[in-house]
Length: 51
Image 1 (cartoon, helix red, strand yellow):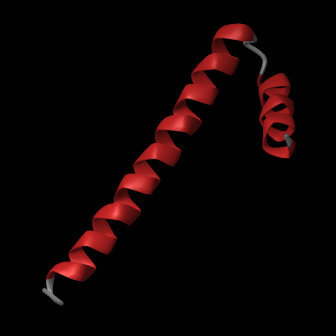
Image 2 (cartoon, rainbow, N blue to C red):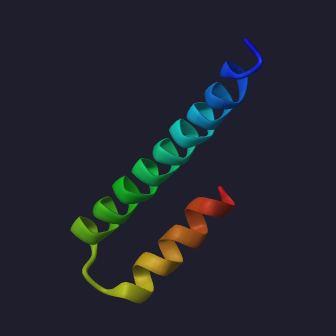
């Protein structure tokens, strides 16, 4: 049982990282489709982070 616990924690951390990465990718794609310029994308990302 104690040996399984660290593995579970690692899996949870990996899952959280994957979700965050997926969300970031989705945001990037959405911004890329909306506007092609990079400065606008950076501004939008900052605005979204502030929200």
